[in-house]
Amino acid sequence: MTSPTEITVNQLSRLIGLPNSPAIVDIRIDEDFALDPRLIPGSRRRNHREIAQWMDGYSGGNVVVVCHRGKKLSQGVVALLRNEGIAAESLALGFEGWAQAGLPAIAPDKLPERDDRGRTLWVTRARPKIDRIACPWLIRRFVDPDAAFLFVSPSEVEQVGEKFGAVPFDIEGSFWSHRGEACSFDTMLEEFGLQSDALSHLALIVRGADTARPELAPEAAGLLAASLGLSRMYRDDLEQLSASMVLYDSLYRWCRDATGETHDWPAHRSAMAVQ
Image 1 (cartoon, helix red, strand yellow):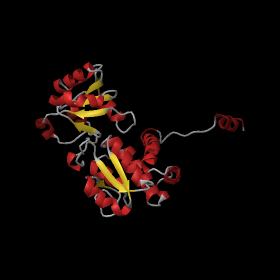
Image 2: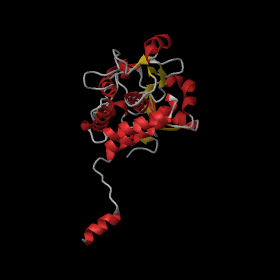
Image 3: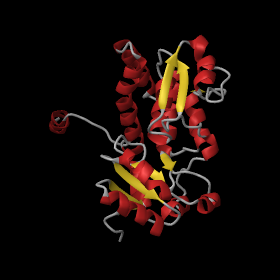
Image 4: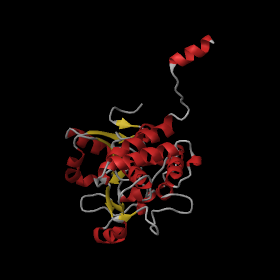
């Protein structure tokens, strides 16, 4: 039985990717990190000795602290955070338990460098429809919750990336883009190591909608329709992205938990029973 200030690997894995997912802080020391230099999706490394410098950034939210095995280091940091009124839990069994469960983990060398505000910065073409919304959703839910996205004229994407240290995506010739019949969303899943049944199912829907192949998934046509509608509702690309997050949140949750569920009117069932 875990303590009231611990969360299990399974419990945390069910929260990652959802809008209410806690902030995840990896405080493994360098020696432990070197044993398995990967990160739980959405987590950020912090130095436990510098807790006074970064703890205020987590005020008002929920935090899960991860060390090597979920013992003294994470439990001590959790106690300090809770002493400051921050809702914090330690991951039982630590990163070692996460890895042993075979859950997705991200190689740090795949992550862009953070800017002076601690964010990863990405740039793409303005007026997004599908892939350029799906990819930001994936990044914010599974890679960097604080990621910032720049939508600019197609001709300026590369120059903006160079001038401001932003990573281009969904741009022809860039690393984070289409590969063969796969779209940029597929590329990110592969490169970040985020494969799961739910995300693979969502990727199929995105691919069908983004590459004019609705036959790939019955839901692809619906995603295309909703995406085009949203693009016409919002002139501002960031407002469109914000409004679209719930669309992908709901699709992901359906892919994960509800694909086998159907719906019918009770009255219709009653009428059929009488016949």
